[in-house]
Amino acid sequence: MKLLENKRKLRSLREFLYILPFLVLVAIFAYYPLYGWFYAFFDYKPPFPLTWDRFVGFKWFHTMVSNKVRIAQLLSVLRNTFAISGISLAFSWFPMMFAIFLNEIKCTAFKKFVQTVTTLPNFISWVLVYSIAYSVFSSTGAINTVAMSLGLLEEPKIFLASSDHIWLKMWLWLTWKNAGWAAIMYIAAIAGIDEELITAAKVDGASRMKIIWHITIPCLLPTYFVIVMLNLANFLSNGFEQFYVFQNAFNKEYIQVLDLYVYNLAMGSGGYSLSVAVSMFKSIVSVVLLCITNGISKLVRGHGFI
Amino acid sequence: MSGSRQKTPKRKMQMSLGDRIISFFTYIVYSIFAFVCVYPFYYIFINSISANNLSEKGKVLFWPMQVHFTNYINVLKIPDLFNALKVSVARTVVGTVLTVLFSAFLGYMFTRETLWGRKFWYRFVVVTMYFNAGIIPWFITMMNLRLTNNFWGYIWPVVVQPFYVVLCKTFVESTPKELQEAAEIDGAGTLTIFFRVMLPVIKPILATIAIFAAVAQWNSFQDTLILMTDSKLFTLQFVLYQYINQANSLRGLINNASGTVDIAASLAKAQTATSIRMTVTIIVVTPIILVYPIFQRFFVKGIMIGAVKG
Image (cartoon, rainbow over all chains, first blue to last red; front, side):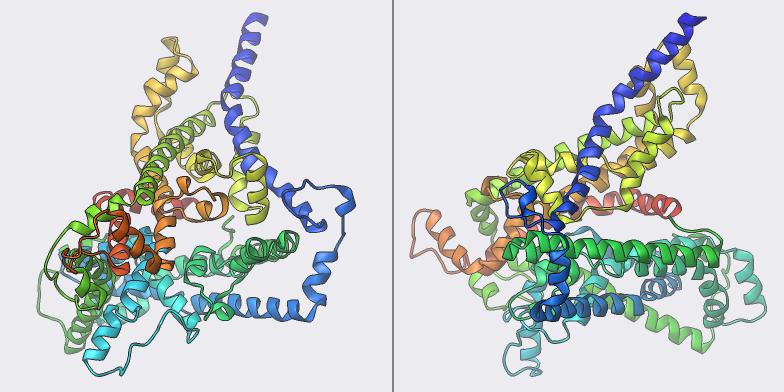
């Protein structure tokens, strides 16, 4: 009996040893970097290791809000972040509408084609998106050539190296890349709507717009709600790559969002510790936002999404 | 996709005028959407195979002019670019294989009742989905681990992905328990069961994970930007980005590098900044365009499972 018990224990330990290397990987790459937050309380200059005489306490958090130039910078970064996230949030219904009207198309081949080609951009990188933008919008690109031959423009307009409507442009690129993909979830949800509801409505003589308004949209609202909540939780995280590739000297003032600012601070001007402080501040606000939205979700739907 | 809707009403033309107008506009609007998504790729492609002096001036808009493929040959002659292609392919292959294997193994192990501390370790892995230390602490960690300017810096940080582990675990749990029990009675150990019994059974989910991991590796840009300063380790994405930003200085490099400065070589085939940029773009985008339509159902399956889970 004891032998059997020992054997079981041995096996249980042996199995643990099998997964141990992977747990170590997780510990190293997900948990260990957290210790880097300490750098926010030191005056860190790579490549020297941290020592206690470089301890500065909350100096960087003070710097963030004490120096006038810094405040102005931080405010403009926050403005950009809020503007871009705000636009995305305001138009977050777009993929839903995209899915609803796509579903109204009766020709299956056309529908499949549209779905495939609009989903494709989601799988190319932001660098490629930028390359496409550069090709199409540069001074000899398609847009300028067509506009000039039609007489709409006198001389080539430089679209990328300007800060005009940059927030809207960023939203447009994001939509170009993501809308088709985001619509897939709604398309699946539409397919799950009870067929009888729609047949009944048709028998009662409802038009297609009426069916969409009174049946499809209410059925999609729960999905939409989750998406809006997730958007809210990620309000401060617009992502990094999109803004990094599109940034240049002309639009920098309006394109620098928090994620990009954190990077530029550290890699551009060597302010490692300040950068960590800013990103800590962002993380804390994000966790609070996540808790709030999760709470709202619990109130409305009865369960959260974490 | 909802295929069921079309089958029911066969009686056709009872659409009211309003419905027909809506229908008409739907087709127009979606055609525009499709055009906006397809044309840029097409535009770049026809430019990359047209006469370079024409493409540089933006003359090529709707169809290729004076078709030639020398751009592709010349561009691959740039040593940096060929090297970048090798790095990109290597990281995609190695990264995908390891990610799939590790996620499958961990997902399977977390279903083993006998595993010591099973629940705790599972949570230990899954929780990491919800936090992130930030770019700089991550960079410092990588520096301490000597993973900057090191090919494995592309691989090790991403091979254990909690989300994929969750997918695999759920999938293994949905397979009949008898499979494992029967193998166990026959005397198979934990590892034998995994390699001989489970791996073949969970292939469908592995395909989905493989596609996602491969696309992520191929597209990755940020890690090169932060970790690598050695140009031998630059990926295609990174090199393309550099080319866009310094395309003008590049032209000289390429036309000289190809050796003979043949003055008679027609202007149509001399490399321009535009031609290089567009050709590289097509090279980088082609694998995705080829892979995506074939594996679309796997992608869709991935997002659906994700939606249910998350």
